[in-house]
Image (cartoon, rainbow, N blue to C red; front, side, top):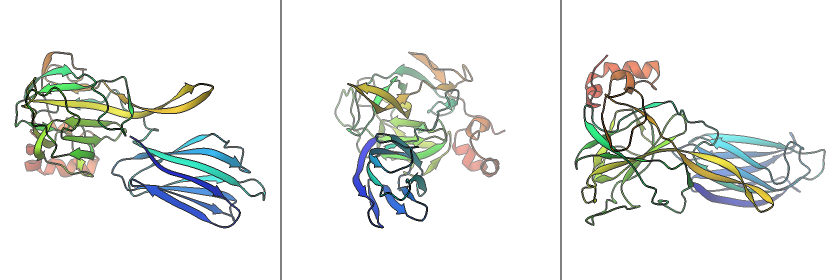
Length: 324
């Protein structure tokens, strides 16, 4: 999501630095007179990767590599510094004015469109699939959608939901389940969001109150139980709302100017099922979940895979079809 965090004007007439931040992402600008460079450091306390946008609103007496009006992107991970250096010209006093924002996710990453996901239901369970309709942003901070796509998996109240892919829990809501009868849609339902290694985000929505098993910042394995589904008060009955998306940027025309606009692009992913080992799911069709050790450990390191397979009791809790 796109968040305004900072606006500053910097005049380098004396040795100084500027530090500002908000919402867990901080930016520090400091002049290194020995190296004749403006050094900008970005730091994130977020559980997910962030892309910091630095708009060069004013720029005088800097290297020609950068121009006034340029928009620079710096990707920063949790607890790490991301560094950018802007060289100055000769001995002239540099002037710079920067607007800083950040979005949730890594704009530089490219999602793996051929990755095969697990069905988010228990092993051997058959679930009917429908396409979700776009009902608008869940908050004012959300990015506009691009190529909207989502799935609804038919469930029964109390069914366990499983992670379709390995990743870090980057957001959740645990106590906002709707209580009205014959619900069609609600922006406030409980959810779990998981960020994958390729920069994509999966969102699982419609959990029971206090029915989520994972915590924000936790690494979740593919096939791991993440919560208990609710939604029995909906017109269509209990179901899981599931989407996969990633942040993206496009240059769009705004009168005589071209500006950078950010979107959340949705992915129509492939799934492993009993009916097909890797295929996109068709509307109003039913599919049976298949989970094997190979599918669950595919993104683990060798040492992680060894430790996981040695812990047979934990592996069995993932509802594996076979242990091989």
